[in-house]
Amino acid sequence: MRTLILIFCCLSLPLTVSAHKKKHDHGHDHHHEHKHQHGDGQGLGSHVHGEVEISLVSSEKQLAVQLSGPAESFIGFEHEAKTDEEKKKIADLKERWTKNLFEMFTFKSGVCKPVAPSIKISALQDKNGKTIGHSTVNAEAVLECPFDLKGQSLTVKLRELFPRIEVLKIEALPENKNPIVRELKGETKVVGIEF
Ligand SMILES: [Zn+2]
Image (cartoon, rainbow, N blue to C red; front, top):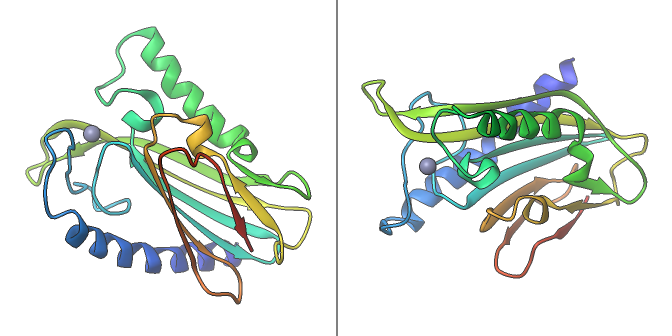
């Protein structure tokens, strides 16, 4: 358990840096972008449709995964689920994250098991606590692998599995190595990260 706590504490560091950087990079607002700060103080940076961020931190046989992005990129809508079809989309996404995470993050050497996966789809609120018609997915998990992650190549397939993700920003912290930063967009659907 101590290892998990350690991993999650270290995850917040690079993400905070990227959140600050992003504010400067995206000073302008496109008419089709909906940018809002998270009302609950959770998550990473601002809410931009089509943009998803993930953070990966490896430690021996464990990979801590953290994901944040607009719900629209995963389920195609952000209002409260009302129809059975909408409710099913949310249930499917939650099941995928908790049970089939290996489809999104694949190592050649074998299948890693998710430990304590959590996924939240929360409504964004303004500073007065009023819901503003957007929602964000925040998900975390630790993948426990039957092999040491040093020297392993991880394939990230999120853009292939969720075609609404236009830009996938990845920050990886391999154990005892320099951080790796990748940005996937356009025709680049899948990326390999060397740990
Ligand atoms: Zn939105």
